Image (cartoon, rainbow, N blue to C red; front, side, top):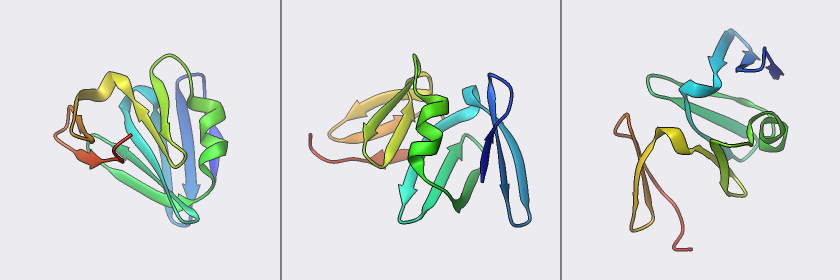
Length: 98
């Protein structure tokens, strides 16, 4: 379950996981079936939720919904080349041709 923390963070509570994640630390958020994967520079958090619930809290000047199941933080991106998103941490994520 996700809760909105202050104006700059979200709180994830799932099973034995509790995390407060600053918006500025999030690289991307991906919907995988019924689960959400939140990727930061150092960690990945996977839990049951809907990406639409996160979109309302995140979408704004630095976050963009690249696909129906993907939200990316433009401040953490270095390059987009040949359908591959490259983040500051070195993480690469392939998206569709369009």
